[in-house]
Each structure stands twice: as structure tokens, then as C-alpha cells.
Image (cartoon, rainbow, N blue to C red; front, side):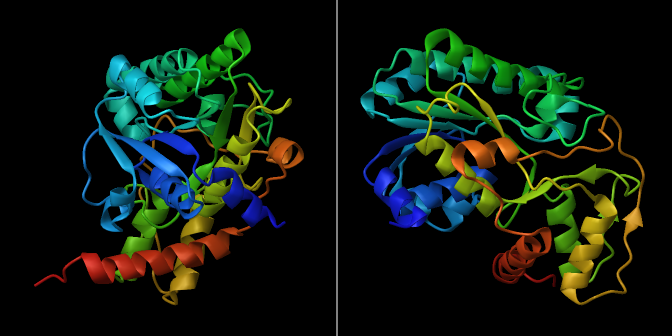
Length: 336
């Protein structure tokens, strides 16, 4: 039996709870689970009309629970009443700039929201396991590259700290209470549906497709690890299927390409794929509180669950650009 068919068989009829289901990654993960026959229950704080899940109509195929991640009683009753088997915890404040401006709200959502959810899981026998979304930012800054899972978590700024804390809390619940929890530390995800235009890849693609010069907020030399969202979704599913395995339960896993690429290289790749080589980037050099270089080793995920990225950066960007072109042509009215 092929891996795809095995995944379909595993998820068919399985009751899954996703926090952050209308977000960028959440929309992709929800679609993949529905395709495999899972019964998805999604926590929705508010309807975002631009969400990929809503625009495609897939939201109508899930059970929708409206409320806040910080509402413990709501979360607990949802897990029990819906007889949830697997939880994907994706909800959180994900924008670094917002975290710097609103640290208290970020800590409430990303840290308190995580332990409240896991406390509810602890009291719900039906839940087989939980995948908690951390981030490569949880590591903080290290001189050792690529980042390995055994490196200490030493976030310094609000978003990094929130992820360091949530990551450790998840591991604590796993090791103290024997819960089948695994943590994902993804590199910078990209793909269709991400409408955070202040991010490098969506912003650059929109500019280039509009015939405008792309803008780089840093000096262009910052190097990052970029992962196409379809590869991340496949990793989440593979990890969730093995949550009860020794070597997976209670463990963190890097999901990344294993390669570091500068912002300038990413922009130039997008420009080259667009066929408009004359568009030179505008470099603002105004970024603060950012780590210079960071990228992840995916070796542990490969060994434990057999995961590795299938898309190259250029391959993922090509599909992503096609999505944005269709989106901008269809959903954005032309200027009068």
C-alpha cells in the first residue's frame, strides 16, 4: 500500500480538533484532512473572509466552534462532546512585529492558550495525541548551525520567548503526564493563502506581479530556511500518525529545508520566475530585533517518521506564484 493510501486509511472517520483552522497553515491542513476523510472540528475566534478555508467553501465541511482559545471550559467541552481523537494546536499570534508591539497579548495567546488547551486534553481520555506548533524562533539565536532539536530554547524577544515557553510547556505535559504530544518547529512557511503582505514572499510576489519593485525591509543579507506549506502539512500528518511511538512521544521535530537562503536571493528567485528581470529590489535596511542567520536540520524527522521536504525553493515558489496570480486576478478588483 502506498504512503498516500496508508494516510487516507489512518484518517478516514477520525475526529480531529484544529485550533487556528482558518489561518494560513490551518487552512492547508484542514483541506488535507478533509481530503483524507477525517471529521474535522475547528476552533474559530472570528470569521476572516480572506481565509483560504472560507473562500474555498471548505469551512462548510467542518464542525465550527466559535470562541477563544483562552476559554478553558469551551475547549474542554468541545474535546469531550465531540469525542476528539487528535488535536492540532496551530492557533497563536504569529507576526513578530505585532508581538513586539503587543507582548502581553502575545504571551496570553501563545503561552497561556497552550497550557489551557493541554490541561483540557489531560482531562479528556478520548484524545489520542496532540501536535503543538512551535517555531524555529523558539531557539533564539545560536552560533551553531543548522539548529538541532537538542539546542537550548533561548528566545530573547517577545515572539521568540512565547514560542520557547509554549514549546517547553508542551514537552512538560508529555513527560509529566505521559500524554502523546509532539512539537513541530517549522522554518519560514510559504505558499498560497498567506495574505500577510508584510512578509517577504507574499509581499514580493504581489509587487512583482503588479510590475512594482519589491521591497526588502532588512539589508538583504539575513539568511533563513524556507519551507513550502505542502511539505509542512505532510510532516504534520506523518507526525500525528506516529504520536504514540517511542521516539516521537514528547519530542520536538524540526521541519525545514536544511538550507539557508538570504532575503536578497529569495527576491531575485521570485523576480527570475516572474520573467521581469528589470525589477530591482528596494532595500530599506530598517529591521530590528531579528536574528541574522537561522536554519534547521530536518535529520531527526527523517529518521523518526521518514519525512523530508519534496519541494525545492524554486519549485515551491513557482506553485505559490501561480496561486497569487490567480488570487489577484480573481479576488482583487482592478484599480479604476
